[in-house]
Amino acid sequence: MRKTLYLKFLLAYFIFGFFGFVVVATFVSSMTMEQLKREKAEALYREATLIANTYAADLYNNETSLDTVKKQLDALDTYLSANLWIINPSGRMILDSRAPIDVENETVIEGFDPTVTENSYYTIGYFFDSFTQEQLSVFAPIASYYKVRGYVVIHYPLSNIAASSNSLLNISYLMLIILFLLSLIILIFFTEMVYLPLRRITEATEQYASGNMHYEFQIDSEDEIGYLGATLSYMASEIARSEDDQKKFVANVSHDFRSPLTSIKGYLEAMLDGTVPPELYEKYLTIVLNETERLTKLTNSLLTLNNLNTKGMLLDKSVFDINKVIRNTAAAFEGTCKSKTIGIELILTGDELYVNADIGKIQQVLYNLLDNAIKFSHSDSIIKIETTEKHNKIFVSIKDRGIGIPKEDLKLIWDRFYKSDLSRGKDKKGTGLGLSITKEIIHAHGEHINVISTEGVGTEFIFSLPVAEDENED
Figure 1 (cartoon, rainbow, N blue to C red):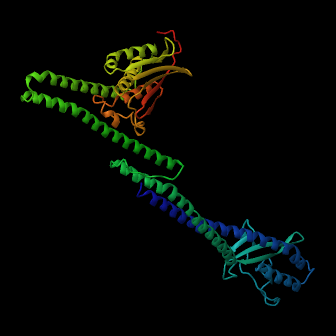
Figure 2 (cartoon, rainbow, N blue to C red; figure 1 turned 90 degrees about the vertical axis):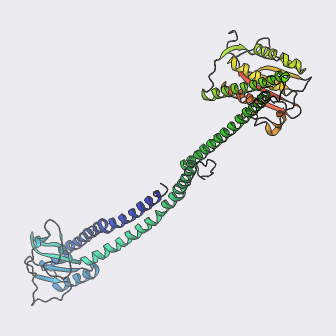
Protein backbone atom coordinates (compact mmCIF):
# COMPACT_ATOMS: atom_id res chain seq x y z
CA MET A 1 0.00 0.00 0.00
CA ARG A 2 2.79 2.41 0.90
CA LYS A 3 4.35 2.08 -2.57
CA THR A 4 1.28 2.03 -4.80
CA LEU A 5 -1.69 3.82 -3.18
CA TYR A 6 -0.44 7.34 -3.91
CA LEU A 7 0.57 6.44 -7.48
CA LYS A 8 -2.89 4.94 -8.05
CA PHE A 9 -4.52 8.10 -6.81
CA LEU A 10 -2.29 10.24 -9.05
CA LEU A 11 -3.05 7.99 -12.02
CA ALA A 12 -6.79 8.32 -11.35
CA TYR A 13 -6.35 12.09 -11.10
CA PHE A 14 -4.61 12.36 -14.50
CA ILE A 15 -7.07 9.92 -16.11
CA PHE A 16 -9.85 12.18 -14.89
CA GLY A 17 -8.13 15.17 -16.52
CA PHE A 18 -7.48 13.32 -19.78
CA PHE A 19 -11.03 12.07 -20.20
CA GLY A 20 -12.30 15.50 -19.24
CA PHE A 21 -10.46 17.00 -22.22
CA VAL A 22 -11.61 14.15 -24.47
CA VAL A 23 -15.24 14.76 -23.53
CA VAL A 24 -14.93 18.50 -24.12
CA ALA A 25 -13.13 18.00 -27.44
CA THR A 26 -15.67 15.48 -28.78
CA PHE A 27 -19.10 15.43 -27.19
CA VAL A 28 -19.15 19.02 -25.94
CA SER A 29 -17.72 20.31 -29.23
CA SER A 30 -20.33 18.49 -31.29
CA MET A 31 -23.19 19.46 -28.98
CA THR A 32 -22.09 23.11 -28.96
CA MET A 33 -21.88 23.24 -32.76
CA GLU A 34 -25.33 21.72 -33.20
CA GLN A 35 -26.84 24.05 -30.64
CA LEU A 36 -25.34 27.12 -32.32
CA LYS A 37 -26.60 25.93 -35.71
CA ARG A 38 -30.14 25.57 -34.42
CA GLU A 39 -30.09 28.90 -32.62
CA LYS A 40 -28.70 30.72 -35.68
CA ALA A 41 -31.17 28.99 -38.01
CA GLU A 42 -34.08 30.00 -35.79
CA ALA A 43 -32.91 33.61 -35.67
CA LEU A 44 -32.37 33.79 -39.44
CA TYR A 45 -35.69 32.08 -40.13
CA ARG A 46 -37.51 34.72 -38.12
CA GLU A 47 -35.79 37.42 -40.16
CA ALA A 48 -36.52 35.64 -43.43
CA THR A 49 -40.18 35.21 -42.52
CA LEU A 50 -40.44 38.87 -41.59
CA ILE A 51 -38.89 39.92 -44.95
CA ALA A 52 -41.12 37.51 -46.86
CA ASN A 53 -44.24 38.94 -45.24
CA THR A 54 -43.24 42.60 -45.70
CA TYR A 55 -40.74 43.78 -48.27
CA ALA A 56 -40.83 40.72 -50.50
CA ALA A 57 -44.64 40.44 -50.42
CA ASP A 58 -44.93 44.14 -51.31
CA LEU A 59 -42.51 43.59 -54.18
CA TYR A 60 -44.58 40.77 -55.69
CA ASN A 61 -47.77 42.79 -55.13
CA ASN A 62 -46.18 45.71 -56.98
CA GLU A 63 -46.49 47.90 -53.90
CA THR A 64 -42.79 48.76 -53.76
CA SER A 65 -39.81 48.92 -56.12
CA LEU A 66 -36.77 46.70 -56.52
CA ASP A 67 -34.49 49.56 -55.43
CA THR A 68 -36.36 50.05 -52.17
CA VAL A 69 -36.29 46.35 -51.34
CA LYS A 70 -32.62 46.19 -52.39
CA LYS A 71 -31.73 48.92 -49.90
CA GLN A 72 -33.52 47.07 -47.14
CA LEU A 73 -31.74 43.81 -47.98
CA ASP A 74 -28.36 45.60 -48.07
CA ALA A 75 -29.01 47.03 -44.59
CA LEU A 76 -30.02 43.65 -43.25
CA ASP A 77 -26.95 42.07 -44.86
CA THR A 78 -24.75 44.42 -42.88
CA TYR A 79 -26.73 43.86 -39.68
CA LEU A 80 -26.91 40.07 -39.95
CA SER A 81 -23.54 39.51 -41.65
CA ALA A 82 -25.50 37.24 -44.00
CA ASN A 83 -26.24 37.10 -47.74
CA LEU A 84 -29.95 37.64 -48.50
CA TRP A 85 -31.65 36.44 -51.70
CA ILE A 86 -35.08 36.66 -53.21
CA ILE A 87 -35.59 33.99 -55.86
CA ASN A 88 -38.46 32.58 -57.88
CA PRO A 89 -39.60 28.96 -57.49
CA SER A 90 -37.80 28.24 -60.77
CA GLY A 91 -34.49 29.35 -59.26
CA ARG A 92 -34.26 32.75 -61.01
CA MET A 93 -32.53 35.35 -58.86
CA ILE A 94 -34.67 38.44 -58.21
CA LEU A 95 -32.47 40.25 -55.69
CA ASP A 96 -29.04 39.58 -54.16
CA SER A 97 -27.88 41.72 -51.23
CA ARG A 98 -24.31 41.36 -52.42
CA ALA A 99 -24.80 42.02 -56.12
CA PRO A 100 -26.20 45.06 -57.99
CA ILE A 101 -29.58 44.89 -59.67
CA ASP A 102 -29.11 43.63 -63.23
CA VAL A 103 -32.41 43.05 -65.00
CA GLU A 104 -30.81 42.23 -68.34
CA ASN A 105 -28.41 39.53 -67.06
CA GLU A 106 -30.45 37.16 -65.01
CA THR A 107 -28.87 34.69 -62.62
CA VAL A 108 -30.44 31.28 -62.38
CA ILE A 109 -29.68 28.76 -59.62
CA GLU A 110 -29.28 25.53 -61.52
CA GLY A 111 -31.17 22.63 -60.00
CA PHE A 112 -32.88 24.77 -57.39
CA ASP A 113 -35.30 22.69 -55.36
CA PRO A 114 -37.15 24.33 -52.41
CA THR A 115 -37.82 20.89 -50.91
CA VAL A 116 -34.10 20.40 -50.25
CA THR A 117 -34.73 21.31 -46.57
CA GLU A 118 -37.09 18.30 -46.28
CA ASN A 119 -39.04 18.75 -43.03
CA SER A 120 -36.82 21.56 -41.76
CA TYR A 121 -36.54 25.19 -42.62
CA TYR A 122 -32.80 25.26 -43.21
CA THR A 123 -30.08 23.32 -44.98
CA ILE A 124 -26.31 23.16 -44.73
CA GLY A 125 -24.03 22.92 -47.73
CA TYR A 126 -22.91 24.77 -50.82
CA PHE A 127 -26.51 25.58 -51.92
CA PHE A 128 -26.52 24.01 -55.33
CA ASP A 129 -22.83 24.84 -55.90
CA SER A 130 -23.47 28.56 -55.49
CA PHE A 131 -20.75 29.00 -52.82
CA THR A 132 -17.23 27.77 -52.29
CA GLN A 133 -17.72 27.55 -48.50
CA GLU A 134 -20.41 25.75 -46.59
CA GLN A 135 -23.40 27.90 -45.74
CA LEU A 136 -26.34 27.70 -43.34
CA SER A 137 -29.23 28.50 -45.71
CA VAL A 138 -32.70 29.39 -44.41
CA PHE A 139 -35.88 29.35 -46.59
CA ALA A 140 -39.03 31.44 -46.10
CA PRO A 141 -41.76 31.28 -48.76
CA ILE A 142 -43.25 34.48 -50.22
CA ALA A 143 -47.01 33.98 -50.52
CA SER A 144 -49.43 36.17 -52.42
CA TYR A 145 -53.11 35.38 -52.92
CA TYR A 146 -52.55 31.92 -51.37
CA LYS A 147 -49.82 31.08 -53.82
CA VAL A 148 -46.04 30.77 -53.33
CA ARG A 149 -44.51 33.41 -55.58
CA GLY A 150 -40.90 33.06 -54.45
CA TYR A 151 -38.54 32.52 -51.54
CA VAL A 152 -36.46 34.62 -49.21
CA VAL A 153 -33.18 32.76 -48.67
CA ILE A 154 -30.60 33.86 -46.12
CA HIS A 155 -27.11 32.39 -46.30
CA TYR A 156 -24.83 32.48 -43.24
CA PRO A 157 -21.22 31.14 -43.46
CA LEU A 158 -20.80 27.97 -41.43
CA SER A 159 -17.25 29.10 -40.63
CA ASN A 160 -18.68 31.94 -38.52
CA ILE A 161 -20.71 29.46 -36.48
CA ALA A 162 -17.61 27.26 -36.11
CA ALA A 163 -15.67 30.30 -34.88
CA SER A 164 -18.34 31.00 -32.25
CA SER A 165 -18.32 27.35 -31.27
CA ASN A 166 -14.54 27.40 -30.88
CA SER A 167 -14.78 30.50 -28.70
CA LEU A 168 -17.22 28.72 -26.41
CA LEU A 169 -15.01 25.62 -26.44
CA ASN A 170 -12.03 27.73 -25.43
CA ILE A 171 -14.05 28.89 -22.44
CA SER A 172 -14.92 25.26 -21.68
CA TYR A 173 -11.25 24.28 -21.92
CA LEU A 174 -10.32 27.15 -19.63
CA MET A 175 -12.97 26.14 -17.10
CA LEU A 176 -11.78 22.53 -17.29
CA ILE A 177 -8.21 23.61 -16.61
CA ILE A 178 -9.37 25.72 -13.66
CA LEU A 179 -11.42 22.78 -12.37
CA PHE A 180 -8.44 20.47 -12.85
CA LEU A 181 -6.21 22.84 -10.89
CA LEU A 182 -8.81 23.32 -8.17
CA SER A 183 -9.10 19.56 -7.85
CA LEU A 184 -5.46 19.65 -6.76
CA ILE A 185 -6.90 20.76 -3.42
CA ILE A 186 -8.42 17.28 -3.12
CA LEU A 187 -5.02 15.77 -3.92
CA ILE A 188 -3.35 17.98 -1.32
CA PHE A 189 -5.96 17.08 1.29
CA PHE A 190 -5.58 13.39 0.44
CA THR A 191 -1.81 13.67 0.76
CA GLU A 192 -1.82 15.54 4.07
CA MET A 193 -4.82 13.94 5.74
CA VAL A 194 -4.80 10.37 4.41
CA TYR A 195 -1.64 9.30 2.60
CA LEU A 196 1.05 10.72 4.90
CA PRO A 197 -0.70 9.51 8.10
CA LEU A 198 -1.21 6.08 6.50
CA ARG A 199 2.46 5.97 5.57
CA ARG A 200 3.43 6.77 9.16
CA ILE A 201 1.04 4.08 10.39
CA THR A 202 2.51 1.60 7.89
CA GLU A 203 6.04 2.41 8.99
CA ALA A 204 4.96 1.94 12.60
CA THR A 205 3.38 -1.44 11.87
CA GLU A 206 6.59 -2.53 10.13
CA GLN A 207 8.56 -1.52 13.22
CA TYR A 208 6.14 -3.39 15.49
CA ALA A 209 6.25 -6.44 13.21
CA SER A 210 10.04 -6.47 13.50
CA GLY A 211 9.72 -6.45 17.31
CA ASN A 212 10.39 -2.78 18.03
CA MET A 213 7.38 -2.19 20.27
CA HIS A 214 8.92 1.00 21.68
CA TYR A 215 8.72 2.80 18.31
CA GLU A 216 6.77 6.04 18.80
CA PHE A 217 4.73 7.97 16.25
CA GLN A 218 1.93 10.51 16.38
CA ILE A 219 -0.97 11.37 14.07
CA ASP A 220 -2.20 14.94 14.64
CA SER A 221 -5.77 14.32 13.61
CA GLU A 222 -9.08 13.79 15.38
CA ASP A 223 -10.74 11.77 12.60
CA GLU A 224 -10.77 8.01 11.97
CA ILE A 225 -7.15 8.05 10.77
CA GLY A 226 -6.05 9.76 13.98
CA TYR A 227 -8.09 7.32 16.04
CA LEU A 228 -6.51 4.40 14.17
CA GLY A 229 -3.02 5.77 14.81
CA ALA A 230 -3.74 6.40 18.50
CA THR A 231 -5.22 2.91 18.90
CA LEU A 232 -2.23 1.30 17.18
CA SER A 233 0.20 3.30 19.31
CA TYR A 234 -1.69 2.37 22.47
CA MET A 235 -1.76 -1.30 21.45
CA ALA A 236 2.00 -1.28 20.86
CA SER A 237 2.66 0.44 24.19
CA GLU A 238 0.50 -2.13 25.98
CA ILE A 239 2.32 -4.99 24.23
CA ALA A 240 5.66 -3.38 25.09
CA ARG A 241 4.58 -2.95 28.70
CA SER A 242 3.38 -6.54 28.77
CA GLU A 243 6.72 -7.73 27.39
CA ASP A 244 8.60 -5.62 29.92
CA ASP A 245 6.41 -6.99 32.70
CA GLN A 246 7.02 -10.50 31.43
CA LYS A 247 10.78 -9.98 31.38
CA LYS A 248 10.64 -8.43 34.84
CA PHE A 249 8.44 -11.28 36.02
CA VAL A 250 10.85 -13.93 34.73
CA ALA A 251 13.81 -12.06 36.22
CA ASN A 252 12.12 -11.75 39.60
CA VAL A 253 10.98 -15.37 39.63
CA SER A 254 14.47 -16.51 38.66
CA HIS A 255 16.02 -14.37 41.38
CA ASP A 256 13.58 -15.48 44.08
CA PHE A 257 14.01 -19.14 43.15
CA ARG A 258 17.78 -18.96 42.72
CA SER A 259 18.50 -17.55 46.19
CA PRO A 260 16.90 -20.37 48.25
CA LEU A 261 18.06 -23.03 45.77
CA THR A 262 21.63 -21.75 46.04
CA SER A 263 21.36 -21.81 49.82
CA ILE A 264 19.92 -25.35 49.85
CA LYS A 265 22.57 -26.60 47.43
CA GLY A 266 25.38 -25.01 49.41
CA TYR A 267 24.32 -26.47 52.74
CA LEU A 268 23.71 -29.95 51.31
CA GLU A 269 27.08 -29.99 49.52
CA ALA A 270 28.76 -28.84 52.71
CA MET A 271 27.10 -31.69 54.61
CA LEU A 272 28.09 -34.25 51.98
CA ASP A 273 31.74 -33.23 51.68
CA GLY A 274 32.17 -33.11 55.45
CA THR A 275 32.56 -29.33 55.73
CA VAL A 276 29.63 -29.33 58.17
CA PRO A 277 30.12 -31.76 61.09
CA PRO A 278 27.31 -34.21 61.93
CA GLU A 279 26.46 -32.45 65.19
CA LEU A 280 25.41 -29.35 63.14
CA TYR A 281 23.24 -31.28 60.67
CA GLU A 282 20.02 -30.46 62.53
CA LYS A 283 20.77 -26.73 62.45
CA TYR A 284 21.45 -26.63 58.71
CA LEU A 285 18.64 -29.02 57.83
CA THR A 286 16.30 -26.63 59.64
CA ILE A 287 17.63 -23.83 57.40
CA VAL A 288 17.14 -26.03 54.34
CA LEU A 289 13.57 -26.78 55.50
CA ASN A 290 12.85 -23.08 55.90
CA GLU A 291 14.16 -22.41 52.41
CA THR A 292 11.96 -25.17 50.96
CA GLU A 293 8.96 -23.65 52.75
CA ARG A 294 9.87 -20.35 51.17
CA LEU A 295 9.95 -22.01 47.73
CA THR A 296 6.61 -23.68 48.43
CA LYS A 297 5.07 -20.37 49.44
CA LEU A 298 6.45 -18.66 46.33
CA THR A 299 5.16 -21.45 44.08
CA ASN A 300 1.70 -21.32 45.66
CA SER A 301 1.57 -17.55 45.29
CA LEU A 302 2.53 -17.80 41.61
CA LEU A 303 -0.14 -20.44 41.02
CA THR A 304 -2.72 -18.30 42.80
CA LEU A 305 -1.83 -15.21 40.79
CA ASN A 306 -1.82 -17.17 37.54
CA ASN A 307 -5.27 -18.62 38.28
CA LEU A 308 -6.61 -15.18 39.10
CA ASN A 309 -5.42 -13.85 35.74
CA THR A 310 -6.33 -16.78 33.49
CA LYS A 311 -9.70 -17.70 34.96
CA GLY A 312 -10.84 -14.14 35.37
CA MET A 313 -11.19 -14.58 39.16
CA LEU A 314 -14.09 -16.98 39.64
CA LEU A 315 -15.78 -15.91 42.87
CA ASP A 316 -17.87 -18.11 45.17
CA LYS A 317 -19.87 -15.35 46.82
CA SER A 318 -21.88 -15.83 49.99
CA VAL A 319 -23.20 -13.74 52.86
CA PHE A 320 -20.96 -13.90 55.94
CA ASP A 321 -20.01 -11.93 59.03
CA ILE A 322 -16.87 -9.95 58.20
CA ASN A 323 -16.32 -9.17 61.91
CA LYS A 324 -16.12 -12.89 62.69
CA VAL A 325 -13.63 -13.46 59.86
CA ILE A 326 -11.48 -10.59 61.16
CA ARG A 327 -11.51 -12.01 64.72
CA ASN A 328 -10.50 -15.47 63.46
CA THR A 329 -7.71 -14.06 61.27
CA ALA A 330 -6.34 -11.95 64.12
CA ALA A 331 -6.42 -15.00 66.42
CA ALA A 332 -4.29 -16.95 63.88
CA PHE A 333 -1.44 -14.44 64.42
CA GLU A 334 -1.55 -14.61 68.22
CA GLY A 335 1.72 -16.51 68.52
CA THR A 336 3.60 -14.21 66.11
CA CYS A 337 2.28 -11.12 67.89
CA LYS A 338 3.40 -12.44 71.30
CA SER A 339 6.92 -13.12 70.05
CA LYS A 340 7.20 -9.54 68.75
CA THR A 341 5.15 -8.03 71.62
CA ILE A 342 2.68 -6.54 69.13
CA GLY A 343 -0.96 -6.00 70.03
CA ILE A 344 -3.98 -6.12 67.70
CA GLU A 345 -6.84 -3.75 68.53
CA LEU A 346 -10.22 -4.52 66.94
CA ILE A 347 -12.64 -1.64 66.45
CA LEU A 348 -15.60 -3.36 64.83
CA THR A 349 -19.03 -1.94 63.99
CA GLY A 350 -21.60 -4.03 65.87
CA ASP A 351 -21.27 -7.63 66.91
CA GLU A 352 -22.11 -8.85 63.43
CA LEU A 353 -21.55 -7.12 60.09
CA TYR A 354 -22.62 -9.04 57.00
CA VAL A 355 -21.09 -8.67 53.55
CA ASN A 356 -21.65 -10.42 50.24
CA ALA A 357 -18.27 -11.70 49.00
CA ASP A 358 -16.05 -14.75 48.54
CA ILE A 359 -15.18 -15.65 52.13
CA GLY A 360 -12.10 -17.68 51.23
CA LYS A 361 -10.52 -14.94 49.14
CA ILE A 362 -11.39 -12.21 51.68
CA GLN A 363 -9.67 -14.33 54.35
CA GLN A 364 -6.61 -14.36 52.10
CA VAL A 365 -6.77 -10.56 51.75
CA LEU A 366 -6.99 -10.10 55.53
CA TYR A 367 -4.16 -12.60 56.06
CA ASN A 368 -1.86 -10.85 53.57
CA LEU A 369 -2.52 -7.37 54.95
CA LEU A 370 -2.23 -8.40 58.60
CA ASP A 371 0.91 -10.43 57.88
CA ASN A 372 2.50 -7.35 56.26
CA ALA A 373 1.40 -5.11 59.14
CA ILE A 374 2.99 -7.43 61.73
CA LYS A 375 6.11 -7.94 59.63
CA PHE A 376 6.85 -4.22 59.29
CA SER A 377 5.68 -3.04 62.74
CA HIS A 378 8.02 -2.15 65.54
CA SER A 379 8.01 -4.14 68.75
CA ASP A 380 5.62 -2.97 71.48
CA SER A 381 3.31 -1.34 68.91
CA ILE A 382 -0.40 -1.66 68.18
CA ILE A 383 -2.12 -2.72 64.95
CA LYS A 384 -5.68 -1.45 64.56
CA ILE A 385 -8.32 -3.26 62.52
CA GLU A 386 -11.51 -1.24 62.07
CA THR A 387 -14.79 -1.76 60.20
CA THR A 388 -17.23 1.01 59.30
CA GLU A 389 -20.40 1.13 57.24
CA LYS A 390 -21.11 3.98 54.79
CA HIS A 391 -23.40 4.22 51.76
CA ASN A 392 -24.11 0.46 51.58
CA LYS A 393 -20.40 -0.30 51.75
CA ILE A 394 -18.31 -1.91 54.46
CA PHE A 395 -14.85 -0.37 54.81
CA VAL A 396 -12.12 -2.45 56.47
CA SER A 397 -9.01 -0.64 57.72
CA ILE A 398 -5.75 -2.26 58.84
CA LYS A 399 -3.40 0.33 60.33
CA ASP A 400 0.08 -0.23 61.73
CA ARG A 401 2.75 2.02 63.26
CA GLY A 402 5.67 0.51 61.41
CA ILE A 403 8.40 1.64 59.06
CA GLY A 404 5.98 3.09 56.48
CA ILE A 405 6.31 3.24 52.73
CA PRO A 406 8.30 5.96 50.91
CA LYS A 407 6.12 8.30 48.86
CA GLU A 408 7.81 7.36 45.58
CA ASP A 409 7.05 3.65 46.21
CA LEU A 410 3.31 3.98 46.90
CA LYS A 411 2.31 3.45 43.26
CA LEU A 412 4.66 0.50 42.88
CA ILE A 413 3.69 -1.67 45.85
CA TRP A 414 0.93 -3.37 43.81
CA ASP A 415 3.43 -4.60 41.19
CA ARG A 416 4.42 -8.24 41.29
CA PHE A 417 7.63 -9.01 43.23
CA TYR A 418 8.06 -5.36 44.20
CA LYS A 419 9.75 -4.66 47.52
CA SER A 420 10.73 -1.22 48.71
CA ASP A 421 14.26 -0.66 49.93
CA LEU A 422 13.00 -0.17 53.48
CA SER A 423 11.16 -3.50 53.51
CA ARG A 424 13.90 -5.69 52.14
CA GLY A 425 15.73 -5.95 55.45
CA LYS A 426 12.61 -7.16 57.33
CA ASP A 427 10.96 -9.18 54.54
CA LYS A 428 13.54 -11.81 53.82
CA LYS A 429 10.93 -14.55 53.30
CA GLY A 430 8.39 -12.44 51.42
CA THR A 431 7.62 -13.14 47.76
CA GLY A 432 6.49 -9.64 46.76
CA LEU A 433 3.23 -11.12 45.45
CA GLY A 434 0.93 -10.66 48.45
CA LEU A 435 -0.28 -7.15 47.61
CA SER A 436 -0.67 -8.03 43.91
CA ILE A 437 -2.95 -10.94 44.87
CA THR A 438 -4.82 -8.73 47.33
CA LYS A 439 -5.50 -6.07 44.71
CA GLU A 440 -6.67 -8.66 42.16
CA ILE A 441 -9.12 -10.15 44.67
CA ILE A 442 -10.62 -6.79 45.71
CA HIS A 443 -10.96 -5.61 42.11
CA ALA A 444 -12.62 -8.90 41.17
CA HIS A 445 -15.32 -8.03 43.70
CA GLY A 446 -15.80 -4.70 41.92
CA GLU A 447 -14.40 -2.84 44.92
CA HIS A 448 -11.33 -0.70 45.69
CA ILE A 449 -8.32 -0.83 47.96
CA ASN A 450 -6.25 2.21 48.93
CA VAL A 451 -3.13 2.81 50.97
CA ILE A 452 -2.12 5.75 53.16
CA SER A 453 1.45 5.70 54.41
CA THR A 454 4.08 7.99 55.88
CA GLU A 455 7.68 6.88 56.07
CA GLY A 456 8.70 6.22 59.67
CA VAL A 457 5.11 6.68 60.96
CA GLY A 458 3.08 3.77 59.66
CA THR A 459 0.76 2.44 56.96
CA GLU A 460 -2.99 2.03 56.61
CA PHE A 461 -4.72 -0.17 54.02
CA ILE A 462 -8.46 0.38 53.44
CA PHE A 463 -10.64 -1.79 51.24
CA SER A 464 -14.38 -1.88 50.62
CA LEU A 465 -16.94 -4.69 50.37
CA PRO A 466 -20.65 -4.62 49.48
CA VAL A 467 -23.15 -4.83 52.32
CA ALA A 468 -25.27 -8.00 52.20
CA GLU A 469 -28.86 -7.32 51.19
CA ASP A 470 -30.21 -9.98 53.56
CA GLU A 471 -28.24 -9.93 56.80
CA ASN A 472 -30.14 -12.90 58.18
CA GLU A 473 -28.42 -15.31 55.80
CA ASP A 474 -25.64 -17.27 57.36
